[in-house]
Length: 124
Image (cartoon, rainbow, N blue to C red; front, side):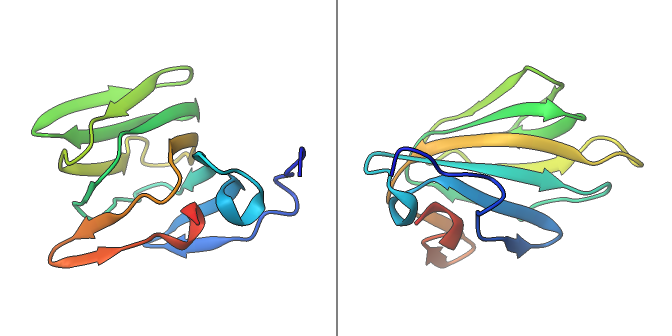
């Protein structure tokens, strides 16, 4: 399948975050997992880590993150690079504007949240 449209992407939500898979195994990709991510104002993720590297590219808005203890803030065009196994927490840095991002990682990635290991459905 050479084309995967955002309009046809399934929608997954977690803690106010909206995930729309674009290039993932269930939509034709074999090596990469790419999804669109929307963060409403005030959204904050759980602290978690992944077994693969993950890259977040900010399209609109501002995103703050704690990555392996480092505090960073990214704006449009910036990339947050999260090494495998680094503890991560994402936050929308704007109190009144949503943020949109494109996320890239490897197909088959697993996330650890507390003691639970999960395969996020938007990456499958």
